[in-house]
Image (cartoon, rainbow, N blue to C red; front, side, top):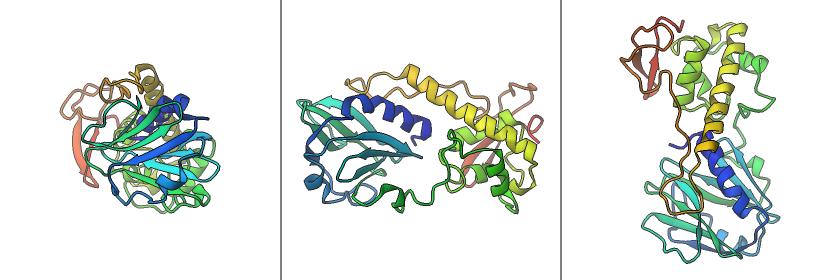
Length: 271
């Protein structure tokens, strides 16, 4: 599933091609993805200019004067810029065609993503209203996370993956951040000290920023036909390395299941 760094990489990839450009038409090859595509989209968006391309959590927001296009990539979705002459493939479900004959094409084999058109203030949308702070912005800090954790008995890994606590800390990044912070993923969120949360905040931000930075440098091409966007390749400390030596102590990494997700950690380095 595309996580925050992949979505941010996508945002950066498409922004130069669509911002300040006018939409000429919208082609819907399906009426429904995870939810029905807003029917008014085909009528309301043409003629509008994309004023900004932003991100909230894993949602991409394409703002116009009339409303905002909200896009989630789901499990397998991607966005690319193609020429209008390029034929659509089987899973190319939506085209936003611009006046310069460029097309923002949404592809989603598993159809778990969403494309919604909202004319009310986008921050009040039900999908966005209850989201926690962005992990790389100023309102995500030690005092906030420590206060939020008090009297919480849930495991800390589950806690930091809760989008109502903080957005964008997906499974890979939770595994990696907890390892770097030296915190066991099994520890109760409410029993972790403030100094340890200070370290955890620092590690979450470090892991996510590194993923975004590497994503930017390995981005292939959002305007070509070379397959899926490159996103990024990371050197992971624990995720996907069950049974391998720990980079810190050379002990054996252990895997458990938490909330139906794989958790890999070092029992020696993480307490």
